[in-house]
Length: 134
Image: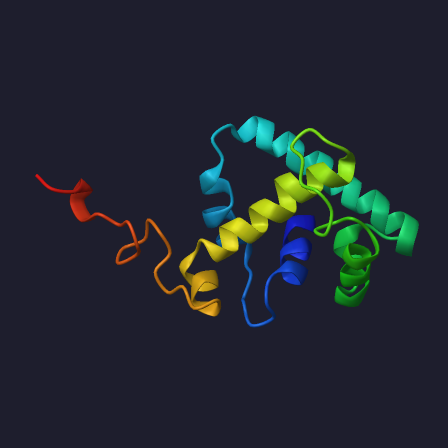
């Protein structure tokens, strides 16, 4: 879907992105799933309308190059991230920032940037086995 299509152009090429990966790291952080889902759907609509204007297809149907160009030619990623801002600011906040955070906070993404022990993972900085001292 569009979330996968976005992750594919945001994440380094050596990262293997799967739906299961996104489900694990992205949705596990969501406290209010319904609110997040509606932001996600609205964000995908925004991506699709930008893609339609630029290339005449929904975002997920664009080639990787078209997706990259769309991000570079708009305020996607480079612009402000505002939870209740303009359509693009909301995409930046709810989709792009979340995807990037989920990636770099996971062991897979952490390894790519030299952080092999992200916080909260076994062996990671701040990880306390069994909930700490007894």
